Image (cartoon, rainbow, N blue to C red; front, side, top):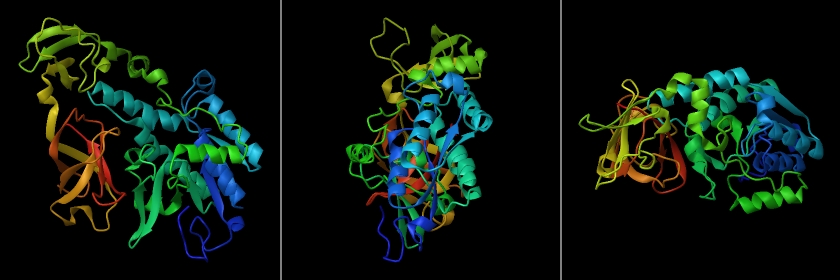
Length: 379
């Protein structure tokens, strides 16, 4: 927990825990369950809330994904074990419109979307946060591995203490206003083992539950099959061409391909391996080329969310570290703002496979602070 002066409780409020109402966003997994149990044990007035994001009957058959039927049951059970109220909010229609439909359209447009970021941005930290305020909660707590620290200009977003669990890439669009209301009690823990130890300490039924691995509405990571169901026309065949437009092979839908992909092209007899370097949805073409063509140093971004202490466009450039995909460490870059929400990012060292639809997240090069980020587009 963050350190506050002696007159403040562990969540930063100048009153006793029993007088501090906290809505805990509960996915049914061990992380959010530990948050609820830990805060309840400290005497806070806890209300657990779980979101139903898609058809409950279908969800019951899914394993390894959050917000499914099994997970809703697990969240309710933890609330019963710890003795606090628990509510289920049906956000199926909102989730369909704000996350799933855009996910499908982005893929059809040749982008590689990150729906978990949109879910945090448009559902959890917007609609759910609004519901928490309607319940007269002082704050909303989640099980995300990220830290909220209080700086000279107010709350700041920082990477988790455990770099292997850090979720900053997926939370870059969290606004300063939202940070004022959010709390992330697990961000300071050294490892996931510490979280599970707390779960066992409180005797939680989910203490040994496996972590979710898939996007909640994409079982087994099979994006293509989900999009085919949502948009049957997405499986339309087309050509695989080289950068000069020469047809090399045929494909069965561009949704089966992503930027940087090498396997599955079924193009034989070539001395040099080919990679997907571009997707042209309008022509239904998969463009392939050498690995060198994947490397880029210039990344156009938009929908910038800036968490710095001074306005984004107040400088001609910012020297930061950036991540252009969640699995890579930050690399040195220069951000050149165009306006408050658009910019061009120049990578000091070229990165391969930078794809429209992914996020470009900004980091302080000298400490753990996250400065926000933006969405990569085709330019």
